[in-house]
Length: 565
Image 1 (tube, rainbow, N blue to C red):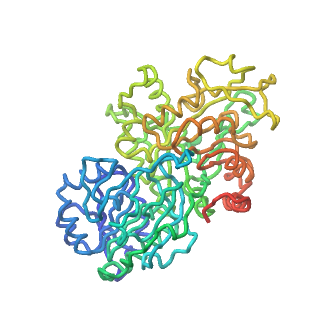
Image 2 (spheres, helix red, strand yellow):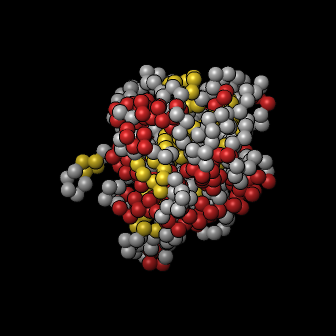
Image 3 (spheres, one colour):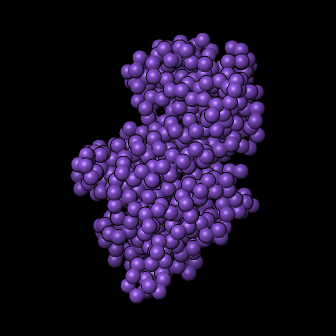
């Protein structure tokens, strides 16, 4: 319920991505929400928040088709309270290289550009930037009153606005990614924008939103615009943190209730005496999804992943409990939520055909920020390779990426090791890795090499494809991130598959999440020190209470790994 004397917030929802989380974030601070549906609503609004999820051109064309562009430009030029998020901030510029034929609102001079994927020294910069970074203020602002120097906020973007002489008066904060310094916040009077997502930045982001809404309309046109500064390079630099991700495998137990579970090499049933005699053991029950999700948020998880591992039995549209889990979780959890399972074309019980894009949209509208695609990504890559490297743009991976942006699409890779005596003994064309012999690693018959064979259907079926090729082609088809599992390591608590992670990170330019094998805090520091992965994921060790997320992050900080507080 809205609190007395608080402004009513108008949301400019152009129809893409997860707006629910922003609504929940604003409501959590006691504000009432209304949605803009006409140009007249823009004119009469007290304060507008423009959430940006998706692609620049799609957002601007949607505003134009609704007849909102002129009224929104007039509203902002009058210095009325406006808060643009990500694409919402980018829309204020004249245009973007993401959609070169589409005009922006033209409030701020200059164009939005893409991150360079290499530094001047030739080292790789993974694009999109995905994770928690800092902001370096170049002037004071009421919006930043509650923030501290080392607070982190959540970014997920491939495109950014660079500081120039022409846009300098708009710059509020700067952020660094690789060698590139970009504008992370703008403010001039009552007009504010963030490249990051405050609704996904925990308490820090909520405080920024609240500070703006409390003072909306009370800032004069000149106040907060700042004086021109001679050299923006003099301001402190920031650094992207490594992410700690908690994963919740969610499935129905034998009674039909959704529970968090955990497999041992993808087997989620207890190894009971009855199971050994031929009966099925019970599904491991490690808690209720919504409660476990909130618990991990409170412990400091940088991101939370839901994997709906029984979605293959029915479609997402019919799976109302899983959608409800997302809706309820997003009410109190203000970090990114990824969901996977069942993102495919299917026909429901009534004969209605649903596209994978329809399914993804349901997940986004329920509170997901990213969707994870598994088996269907494998089929898309196989089709691409069979066509001689020609993309048909008909797979769910391609369609979702085109509609919502690559940053919203994660490809989950489920390979298993195939041990060989030498690289020549492996199938032609697959990548063969050398095991970490110095760490005592070898195959069951003393093999020193292996390749990683891709599986589908939850690891139950192998394909004639290796994991490195799958990851590489998935990026070509539109994946913005790779979640790299390994069936051999799953549930073993002996650490991540370092040779696999090294091979994939060298094959792609997008961020990679290490998954499968973590059993202690030191496994996180090991994988971050031995590879260039952007994030590391764990499940069982957190579910069983053996190690808390806060303990993992304390350990990472103690060995000098950039970590969000």
